[in-house]
Figure 1 (cartoon, helix red, strand yellow):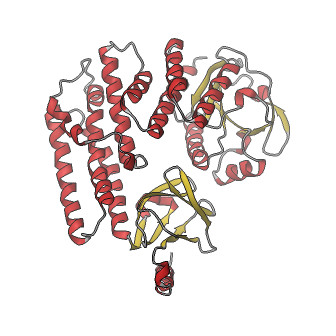
Figure 2: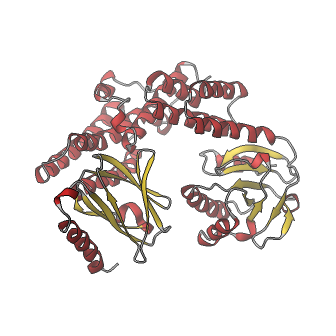
Figure 3: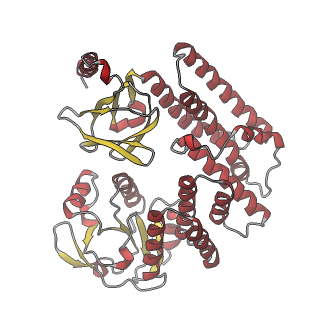
Length: 462
């Protein structure tokens, strides 16, 4: 990208702002340029609410003009990528990014840039620390705490330097910055017991000093100002899984982690949107795990349907359960009529005959489609002895074909299905394992499930 063109965009917005009268001083501007765009639109959200969307120009530029903006955290979405923004009234924030290296290429300029650059740098630091700390989970609790304290102290020094250079910050920004500094490290402490046990291959739950969790007294897990901020969300989820793991250990591992996670959610969370989110996650993982007994799945369903107040989420899980019941494990795959990339009508059963096959469904969400393509391309190369068949019943034929070409998927293994097949009535990347005799071996899993590849390795003997 020619840097002069980017400077011209900044100059244009600055000139535009200088020409406005004082009566428009409450207007906020957010714009920029996207290199190698994934789509022709960008979206701006406040929490779950879509505030506005704009189309990219021929030069891949965009501009949001927002009147009477509320100070706070916003979300910028382009294609499958998401980025947090902190905006204040009268900001004139510019962003420049390359989708081929989204987070690392992202740079802010203009009024409000210092705060956003600080937050994105913290995000990148946290990603590096996640990889670094995998080497520290073998340490005992006191040495692990020293590692955490060392990183925390260094980040606080950097933040104090930032405040010296940019002293005028709102109470909310101060809060978000401190959460972005501390919560990712506290999350590692919550994960420490089971990760330490795993890396040391110990059979015992590790002894941990009561002072190890002293940071908890300064954390409010029901803080509504933080519900859309990733460090808060990640920390609370890990904290609840910590409680679930403790309960599982006390129960001699008879209960399941996800059912205990759902119980911990109900016992500790008061904010409906967060509670619903985690209840949905718990039931989702329970339904997709073939190791979970029917009685535990029934418990999870009762917890979810009795306590989740999100109607959309309830409808989605009800549909998922119904779809699974329509194609039970051990049943022969029903006859299915499909259309290939060239619109020729074929029989799915003939195509997969005498082959161990993974059938997977196409979602409609662009981010999920992006992840689907990456995952399928990886799996087809790694597990070449399996036939991977994509079944699309939700996307339009045009959109489906466009994605096959742009994502470089093998068109010979992609098929379109007419609507009306009840066991395909889901909108996520559901995977179904069918053996060479046409018998369903797993009726509900996910291509990105942590256990999926283990399924494939055990499935090869069929």
